[in-house]
Image (cartoon, rainbow, N blue to C red):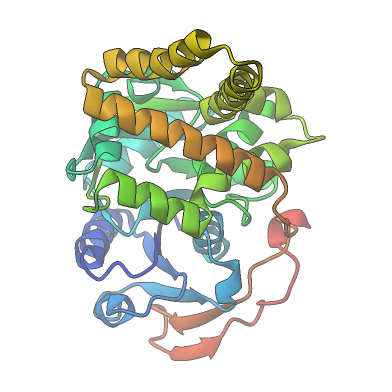
Length: 348
C-alpha cells in the first residue's frame, strides 16, 4: 500500500466529517487507506466516522489518552509506505499527497515533508498568533525545517529507524519530538510551497484555552519532551531548538529575580521587571492584548515545564492496547485488536 492517512480524534463531531471526506478523497487515486484513531470520544464522532470507508481503532485505556498516544495509535495500525498524520479538526488538500510523495521520492535524504497550513479559526488569541507565525516564521516557509507542525507526510522506513512515530507520553509537541529523533539519525525534514491543510482549531477564548491546557496536561508537554530526551542522542536538539523549554527556563529565572527584589525591598527594579516583558511582547505581537496573552502563556509554559519533567512515563516502545471498531477491509465491527498487548513492532 502506497500511503496511509492517519487521523487522531477525540470528540470531533463538529469537524470529523470534513476531515474524513478530505482524507478519503486524497488517498483514493493512490489506492491508499484512512485510519481513524479515536481516543475515547463520547459524542457522535464514531457514529459519523462509521459512514466512511475507513478503518476505526479506539484506545482501549482512557488513562493513556494524550496527543502522542492518538498519533502513535494511528501509526501502529497503518500499512502504507508513507504515512500522513491529520488532526480531526483539519481538512487535507487533495493535491498534497501526490506532490509530497514525488518530493520524497526525489529527495531520499528527507524523512518527511509538509506544506502550507491555513488557520481558519482566529477568534482566540492563540490562533491569531499562530496564523501570524505561519505567514512569517521560517519554520513555516518552504525549505528545510526542524519539525512539521500541523502534520506532514513521512517515510515509514525512516520512522522504523527511530523506534516509534509519536511518544505516547506527550500531551503536545509530538511533531517536534519526532523531528528531533529523525535529525539525530541524520534525516532531514522539509516544507514545500504546496497547500497541505486547513486547520479549524478551537473557537474558545485564549485564556479559557490556557486553562483547559493546564487541566488536560497539555501545558506540561515541554517538560515531557525534555524528560524523554534525557540520555538520548536528540537531547542537544531539544535544548537548542524547543523554544518552550528555553522560555520556561527564562520565566523561572524571572520569577526568582522578582522574589529577590521583593525580599530585598528593591521596588524600582521590581516594577521594571514587571513592565519589561509585557512591553517587549506587546511590541513583538503588535498589540498590548496579544502581549498580555503571550506573557500569561509564557508563565503557564514555565509551570508546565516543571510539571512535565516530573510526570511519570510509560515505555514508548510498547504497543498501545486498542479495539478495532470498524475494519474497512472486511466490514467487521467491535473486534478486539489481536496485538493489543504485544511489543511494539518497530522495537523488534
